[in-house]
Length: 271
Image 1 (cartoon, one colour):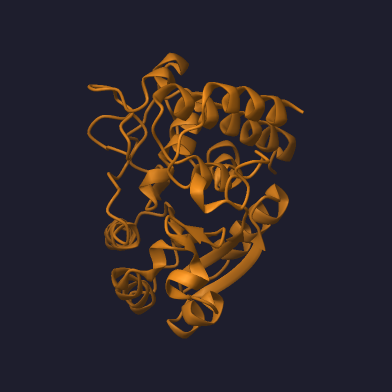
Image 2: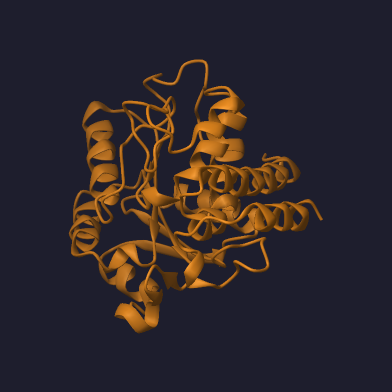
């Protein structure tokens, strides 16, 4: 059903593009962008019903990158998918660029929701899905959240709402890399037992290796078969995945690599 090899190949290329973009811009968030590359690749090159030739087609699936600072992963996928020329990636965070530091639905082809203020994306995903349900539409809304982001109270209001309205076409993801800008999740505000918390709020919850494409795809199929309740897929990931000196280092949450570090990272990703 899915071309796993293609998705894995594109995930690797997404990681290479993330490093190159942020290195050129000397600004951005490499750690959390690299950790979600497999999920983004699985969605855009396997799961989602989207068409770059018709970005606004009514029956398309929607993606909400609630952890908006990880947008380099999204931009790379959109360029590889054909939403805009690859050359645009060289303008990340430039003044007037269509690729700003957080996703903009007004500027970037293929971006459905402007995000950046953490905690708001799931509420927006619920609104889109509720509108679809009222209109009798059948598309899915996928929402990627950060593990630090779910410390926001609005996430839990949205979790209650999704369950209350039986939004089974909302599929959420938590990029569980255990690190946020200020350090380890457990040291900042421990949010352990994420699975049990979402289950208590009425969600169907699945936990997978967030770097195993086959597991991600299988979990999404299970989520689609869950009727009458929203689903959450917890992605156990590594911040900075694929680049040895960035992996599991909170300091790479929002720091750009030097030219030498870019060269090293690209070599590692090629190997």
